[in-house]
Amino acid sequence: MNHRILWVEDEATGDLADYVGPLLLAGYTVDIAESATEAISKLQEQTYDVVIFDLVINAGDAPEWMALDQENTERFKELNLGFQLLQSLFAPENARICVSLPPGRIAVSRTAVFTVVADPEVHRALEQMGIATIRVKALSSLTVLKQIVEELIPQ
Image (cartoon, one colour):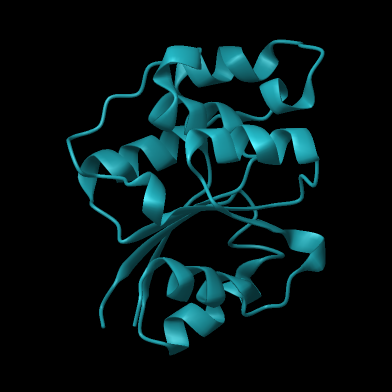
């Protein structure tokens, strides 16, 4: 199998580590990015079969992401950096930060969102970007990441 998965999640090595277990047991290779900066770096270095994003992530150490994180806006979706990162990747015309990746590094058809954000407006905006797989953490079992990967990579 040896499919490579990137999980962009700032709490993946802490409270949410149990979600990775079923993927590892199934033979997947899982990389974790704990910030927007780290996610971009990993995507520049490696091609992934599936990328799973949280919407509420840290900026990391890139000045442009740190500045965006400090801004105040009225709408929640504009505050969370995971949403901004997805917009930079899949809707650059609406993005506030430009992200440049080598061609073919990420496909919207193999991108999912796994987040605490249950706002229907945010989910519609993600769907407009082409992201069809969206799961809410509070409603999910520990096997949810494995289920997402199996949906996006037909066995």
